[in-house]
Every structure is written in structure tokens, then in C-alpha cells.
Amino acid sequence: MVLAAGMGTRLRPLTDGLPKPLVPLGDRPLIEHVTGDLRAAGFSRIVANAFHCADKLEAWGLAANVIVSKEQSLLGTAGGVARARAHFGDDDVLVYNGDIVAHLDLAALSAALRGVAVLAVTPRPRGEGNVGVDIAGRVVRLRTVRVAEEHEGGFFTGIHTLSRELVAALPSEGCLVGDVYIPALLRGETLTAFASRQPFTDLGTPDAYLSANLAWLGDRDAFQGEHASVAPGVRLRRSVVGRGATVSGEGDLVDCVVWPGATAHAPLRRCVVTGRDVVRVA
Image 1: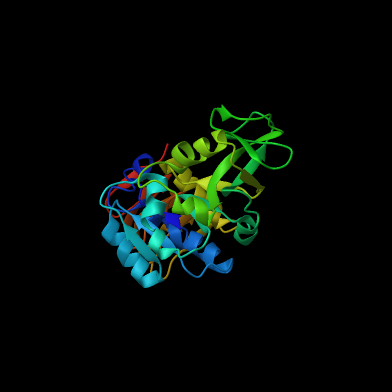
Image 2: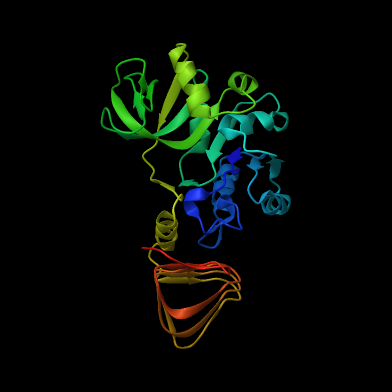
């Protein structure tokens, strides 16, 4: 399940008219990077929840063969999974935050499930991050709640697998970490850590969003999508120009993202052009 119902508040104004998982990352929407990894790992049934601009996500899901679970009010991460239970059958559920890019081994993550859940964690020295792990690989700290001595710290990537028993017991509203995982730790239940050294990116802010697009370019100096038009006097430098976009003017487009169908006017530097706004990123 892809968690996609949030308001995208930190990413505004990019998310004023679009759910965060549909913002373009490189040549396709962010959520398609996630669903591509899920399908490559063998997950054939994918569910995404929706609230903010839900109709747009629902239309995308219909075309992408993704089930969309619409929420009438925000239910939180635990409540969103609980509402979608009917789509899961009697299976464990891999949950993936819809604003995360991380190419880790999702099949291995699910296979590592021991206890009520397994969390993908980027290891850090002891005491660092929002997770603590003991020598046996069990989670012993979440946020500031510690139940045993930790061997190392880490950052929770926002990717985890929930046991079918835990899914069945989820509350109708609430947070998976604060309202489910931490009480489970305090009851002595087992949460397992899956160490992942793959980098992960949270596209939560305009700066992080722009950085993720520039990282997507890799060794390329620029990307120009199908049917995009760039004026002869414009030079693309470390920029992404989406499908059907237009870049007019003269000069350099440097460290910019132009969304599909949008129009940008050069010169520009460190901007995201959405069709509604030209968002300048400090």
C-alpha cells in the first residue's frame, strides 16, 4: 500500500492543485517510481489511499491499474491502511510512504518480517536517528521511547511490512508509529529492523524536490521530454523539461524543473515551473 492521502503541506505551493505523489520526478510522477519498484519486486496488487485532490489520484490509479482508497477525512497512516483492509485479503501488507524515493530490496524486506512488523532502517551510530536497534536486530527505540539497550541507531525510511494480524487490529484512525508501533513496543511485542544502506530521499520540501530531480538526471546535463519545445536561444543546464512543456526566451535554464505541459521563460535558475506558478527555490 502506498500512503498518498496527505495534504503535502511542506511541499506547497507545488501541491496546491496536485497530490504530492503525482508531482513529476524526472520523466514520470513520483508514485510511478514507487509502483515500478513494487511491481519489479513481485507485488501485483497495489493500493493507494487518497484525500487531497483525490479525484486526480483516482484517475491516475484507474490508468495505472492501482486501487485507490478514497478517504472522506484524513485518517492517519494507521487509519488509511485499516480502511483499505478489504483489498488485502489475508496477507501481510507492505506499506510505502508516497513521498519517499528509495530503491531497496522490497522482497527481502517482506521476507524479513518477524513479529508484528519489519521496518526498513538506514543504520546510524548508536543513539542517532529516530530508531534504535539491539544486537539481534529488534527495534528497541522509536522516537524518544526506548524499551531496551540499543546496539545502533537509524532512520526509519517510511517503508515497512505489517503482519496480517497487526493489519486486522489497526485502529480506524491514528498514526502507525505513535499509535501502533510504540504501544506494541511497550507491550513487549517484536518489531524487526531491516537494515538498508540504499540512500532514500524524502521529497517533502521544494528544495528536496528540486534536489531529487537533479539527482535523477545522473550524468546527463538535461532531460527533455517527448513533444517538449525549447527555443533555439535557450541552453538547458542541469534541468528537467517535461513532456509537452515549452521553454521560450533566451539564455540559460539552470537547475530547473518544468512540469509537463507548462511554459517557462528563460533565463531561470533554481525554479520549479508548474503551469500555475514559477516557484523559486532558495
